[in-house]
Image (cartoon, rainbow over all chains, first blue to last red; front, side, top):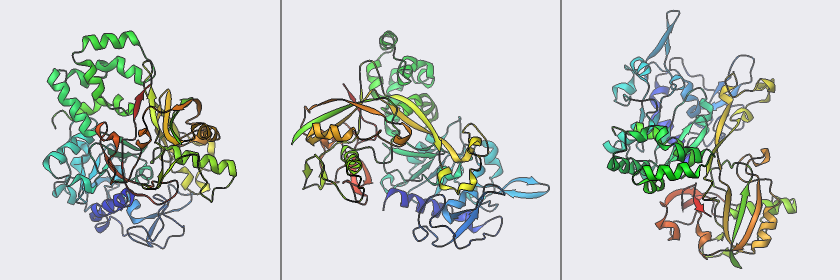
Length: 281
Length: 209
């Protein structure tokens, strides 16, 4: 099975409690469009064939027909998550779409793990996911790698080669996330899906870099972007020969460190951020 | 049929599609443009490997020099706007990526800007270069000016197996297995066809010129 289809199946299976306990009854209708408006799969290829939910961004705009898998992120579910807030005394159920900055990992065994900020974690503490222990506490601003390495070390990630889904965060662009789902089958190339599309990071490569920095006693320093300044400047198009030579002289094992840095310039620029996340993993 | 290397100087960043640009697929698109026919499989000036069932052509390799690295660039474009009905974008001038009611329909994409890009292949290198010049650019959004290039060098490749830097059937023992991690994926091996299980190198590969 290709990596895209498998990712939708994993997402569908992992989010079943949301559809089992909807805040409002689901009004599934026959679709009036040839394909799902988000994932663009034909209606016989989606997880619930021929069933769609109509959605429009605001009144006056056109309707879009979404398959049950793609619409799940918009469904409020007080059973699965809990009550997000009260509006004029009425409870408003929490939904995946509203959990901004919350990384989600769906393991090879179709189990969804999320690491929301503390504010959100407190609100959803009584839902099914929290009671099953799938809502994780977090530190730092970008906890995706922290969650991933934790799940991997504890064995909860399952057999990596069977494929897991790694979502960086839903934020406001649910459509951009749901249309880009795909599984990762190696920790050397983890596909992170977020509202700016898909990107890959080499998690094992970053762990090797972290270990090397630890050996050299530079672990704390390397968490700051200014430590890498001449290298990062070159990655952003400002190459300064003299500054790089000076950095190499000043940094013990500089040559080796540069060879361990990720080839992908976008990941390279985010190395301090990722090193911060992996601190206690 | 000689092993060759084509070097492209890049004038704009490349937005990588899901399947990394590959010489045989680019040449096929160029042939389609030449013949104005997208419905048939054209003969390419590349050696066909009958045993593996693919043209001997490498994927895009980013080439850097001593003085310039692969540069991190970005590109903003609508994400789901094109999939929505036309009535949704009532006023195109309102379309902003910094934040408005269209926020959820636009996104920033990561692009790569190495000074040069390199392809390896086996076949008639000069003919391949002539064909390649028919394309506006490589990668996603090439029609919007991304991945614009100029061919600066075509010459015999130093190594005969350099074209194998691409997705291959899982039974292969690729020469790059010592350098890169072998990744398992699904990709079409030929110019046409359904995705099949393959092994491939990482998407971003660097070569120092």
